[in-house]
Image (cartoon, rainbow, N blue to C red; front, side, top):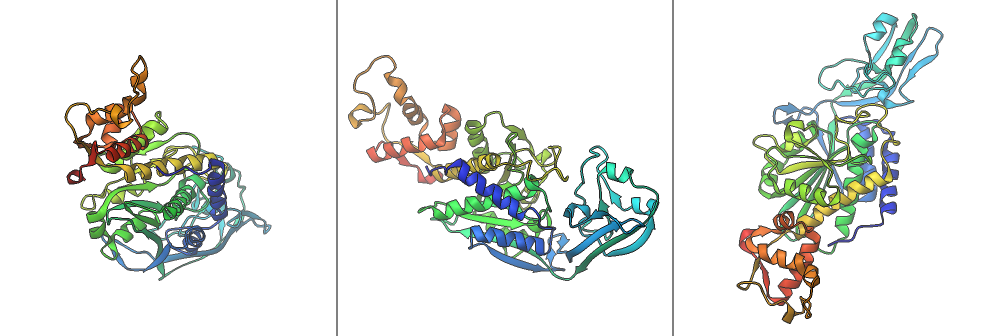
Length: 438
């Protein structure tokens, strides 16, 4: 199996990358996405970027107009700014139309959005597909606004431009693919947004360094929902991926230290699901499990009827469930080097498990004579059998039907250890890979 890098080094690099990208004003289109992809290309230059023009059909959707914002604020009658987009880009509703108007407090409050059940946070609010303007405050700030005449200003534009996505294909020894998809559209949220691209690009960097890869790896960096729909609709991606993707993972919310959460594919029965459950069982057995009915990210699109790609998700705290989600409190203090490193290692183990997974067939009847092959203690006494129990249990289930994941699940030994055992047995001639079952 492949080595796990020093945790402090990788975790800190992941955290620093998130910090560098945190201030960008990302949306489903625009320069914030392009800035983010440029930072990811500094880690893995082979990532390519693609522009899909406004108005391009994408199944039941259409690529929207591009949004650009330069400034926004609200001033009171004394000319004092009471809200400033340059403080945090969460202050403006995503995709807001231009605005330059004086208004009363009652009029202003109609276009101010808050999170009433969390009165001290600024919510993340968007209006992609209905044109409007709006600002975001804490409920406490909104409640404290005095009667006055206010000047509300948004310097933005919607125009025919394009949707931008990033892609990386790392060829392997076969055309069978593993998909890793993440999104690059949310502004100034660390766990919900930046943790996924950061962990994904460092996995790509690690995979790129390996001398051998059994699978081809497809990395996709897209705006959520419209990005995955657009990507699947472009360049015959869907038809090719349906034929070649054997397992896939959607990476989001992988930066905090609280827990791990596995979100099933639509039926929970794909190779990706089996890998996720197996790895988490050994890595963090108290992980939380969600069915597809509790989905919430781009696994929705990859599992849609007719798409049917074998994609699940492994998160830390799951999107939509942790209190800081889609608020100003999903900041750099919520994620950590150790949290990012933990997610990186889990996905690394998933990839290692996929690379190692084979179906084996024992080549003799009854128990093989391991001692004459140097695989069993030559002195038999109480306890000597324990040292080779994993090997004998593996042999018992290496009947040509079970892959390493199935045997690992049954005998309670990680796939990494079973893979080493299998290699020893293949060298002795006691075992062969059952190619017909692959």
